[in-house]
Image 1 (cartoon, rainbow, N blue to C red):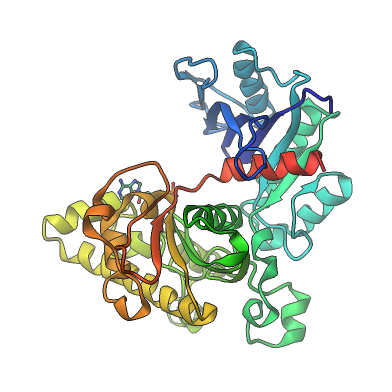
Image 2 (tube, rainbow, N blue to C red):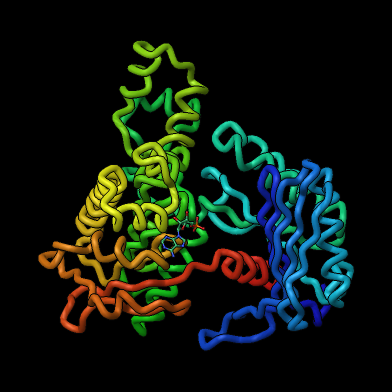
Length: 411
Ligand code: AMP
């Protein structure tokens, strides 16, 4: 890495998509760490199909968003197409200014509690974790290998979704099942969305004008996937997702918490296979299973029109959320802030209002007019008198990955 290398490319590789952002990490923030200026952002989707699409926005150049459609055969072709778009803006991946490529990796198991420079041994470990993340880790590995081939001289850094949760105490991470069986199959609670929980809990502390070490935060990451975490003094002590992202809150298409007996009951009485039950609970449940819609905007629209199914789905969603707020209040003992983030948490004021309604005894309340304000900024929505701050904190996983990547290669 040369002294001028301050850019980080962040890649989030899915099975048929690649999301990317190029950031310049030169700018120093108040805290002294790199802040990150976004230079370009984009996405390739439907990789492997005839109708692949690349959407590229060159933010630094102030250029207009460019969209190209046409077959992109695989991840290698996708990354080459991204590189060509960046080069057209004078931001080519061959630039000496590129310091590293940061990759989102979903499952780091117990092995990875921090961002890690990727070598063959690290790739083998990520590969060993495929059985516990069959949908995500293979795509992440493909993304890393493709980027390595493009710039073999450059550090490739893996930033794990599970890493932030590795501080969970053993009593929170273990399921109460036979220890030998659990250990033989790596069955324990890992948690996900860790990059978001890390970023949002830190940003919430900043919003309160405090150091992360001095605050306890309940983070509610409510997107299509959803998870809650209890963060004590900057360290995660509990989170709602478990071995896989299926556990916990009601989500767009996932059931969240369920009696495990439902699974063998379905096998015995409905003759469903493991794969069918997996599909039912991960893809056909949650809000979608309850009312036929998984988008909170549509659900709110239906409720406004008097739709009872949508209203019940919403109530079930909120009831679970409330239970986790209560549980994590008990886990933390003292809560300084509850932070809402991700697509639903950042945008759906009725969800925030309903989740906190009736929790005055826990010191939590939402100010209706503050809650109604639409903004991209981190902000407080609780009234002055409330003992616990309630905040909306837009998440920024790419920035967090870029910061962790840049810090590691400069360490
Ligand atoms: P994410 O997974 O974080 O991208 O969140 C996606 C989800 O956010 C969508 O499925 C919607 O349910 C939700 N969402 C996005 N915008 C809004 C909005 N304005 N109001 C309510 N929900 C929203």
